[in-house]
Length: 346
Image (cartoon, rainbow, N blue to C red):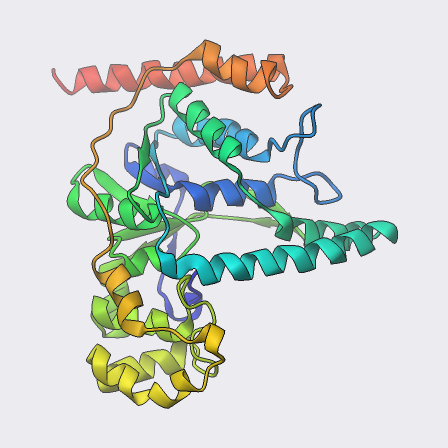
């Protein structure tokens, strides 16, 4: 779900080459779901191996990350830890969406309606423990560091982006990263550059969003941006306050300025929400304002060719020829990186 404030946020298109040599902390779960939803068969079902196990996420991790590494990017994946209790509402809503989509998908399949099958199948996504485990193993085998966040992955990525000089940006599709204080947010990083939509093919370019420029453009501070997000709806209060979109929320936070006055003004609307949609704004504000994060260290590891082959070729029926070709490419990227690091000392 995530925060939807795209209509008021300034951003600029960038080329992948603009990120060359930069360390990017990737919101792992957000990216894994992105792979599951975009790497699919013509009827919308994900890629699967001979034992009917989903492999779309592994395909994205392997092929798309190698493309990015070849462009000189330094990727670090940050995985979610224990989700805040408030996120239970979001999980319930996502489960409801999946159940509804499953019924519609089965109806579309009976009618052999490929378009609707593809639409509803993308809503049936689910990452299980085994998929997460193998994703971590594959990333590490590729020499890509994996960080386990104490809580929200995007909060940890934003924190590392803020405190470590060598971390340039967070990468996620969700704007929540800005509420967690990410200095720079890169969107569309791991998407295919040429995507098929219902109206044809479109070019997808990465976007760079800089927190300081966002706050200056909107003429608000970070606390007010957090309040704006809560009014519109976050993962912790998905519905937000009905009737308040990004523009109206911006007007409210600029008018009332302090969180306590902002939410005092919408107290009646809050109380009129159905019980399951009501929320304590102070709890949500605190999650964004003081998230559970840690100062994690990371290093770029060695490539484990045998592990890559075992996961992809032996376990999941990937083409041996294609995998070997990409392993060679990955080794070449690693060697080039080593040479550049050595040159820094001379």
